[in-house]
Length: 443
Image 1 (cartoon, rainbow, N blue to C red):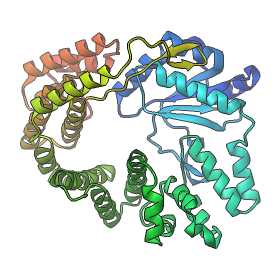
Image 2 (image 1 turned 90 degrees about the vertical axis):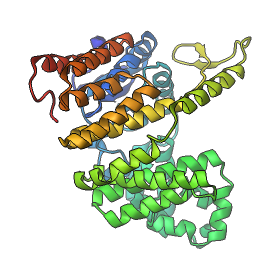
Image 3 (image 1 turned 180 degrees about the horizontal axis):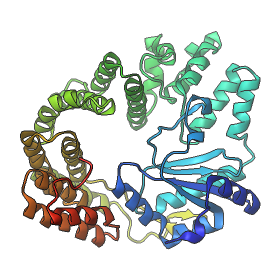
Image 4 (image 1 turned 135 degrees about the vertical axis):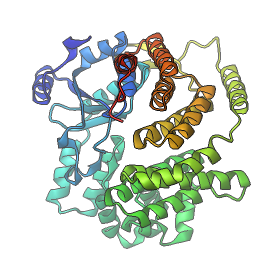
């Protein structure tokens, strides 16, 4: 569709980037979310993004995360299942990353501009800071500079760097609120050397922590949670997973009944994600039905839809209609004004779909599948997305409702096409459904 932007290989991309003095933009596809890849293709294929890539970057698409950017030796964390976009200089140094995908052109333009500016800056590169770190045998200053650079590039520093940083910190650093905030902003893993250093003096920690905004603290807690859960999954450590679960629950428990309920939900969700991450299907299925019935099926659809409507109306009332100002995208010269609105209904629909899909892939038990059908039906009440329709159709087919399944799979195809997204996977499933074969996919 836009082959003139493609490099044939990673090596070719970097050679071409050096020759044309451009950056390299590597789009990493999701291995388990076809819809996510379709969304990315839509955003990248917009004329504004294609033009920005043509002027500034060599483009390459890969179907999995390149091995060269994984592992502890790179000193930052990128999961092997990462999907999104890597922005690199001609010497293979990361300039920026964009996790996930978007059908909008705006995030792609923003990240291209950020990467171009980083490439043109006179600051010390990540490669130089890594070299300095190894040459100085991990001095305090070299580690701190390296961590700062890694964070600036939207990456997470390896835990070993944070632990080493706190071990080599001057004695008075433990009393420095700015240094404690620096460690907190690096999101140390629960129970790590760095985290223990951070909370050793509880009074100093509280002063440093609560001088940051609530929004920043929420983001940091989420980063700590993701990194800690990843460690539990990697080590298959159930006890540590329970500790992560308890920590996440405590972030919500501020005394009100509603927050305590959210804390219990977060705790249970953590363990489900852990079981899923280590492929413990028995433990997952033992817990998942109570979780969704308690925390999602009891939620009133009409209440959420009404709240979304009010929030959206109030949000747009605040947007000035006579202003000509906006954020200028340097690569295009266009001023844009964006209003971000995320409906809660979409969140509930997505969560119910995730649960139903996982049950679909884990079991052939008719009772379990029937329960998953009720979840996805409720999800469709919140929002009729093609992904939900596809899950519903497959569940119907697997439980013997073949005619109804064919009807819903066709709706999923129509929904994708209406959104200008490919429906290739759905069409393949529909063709198999129409033949009446028992197995329409890998599950």
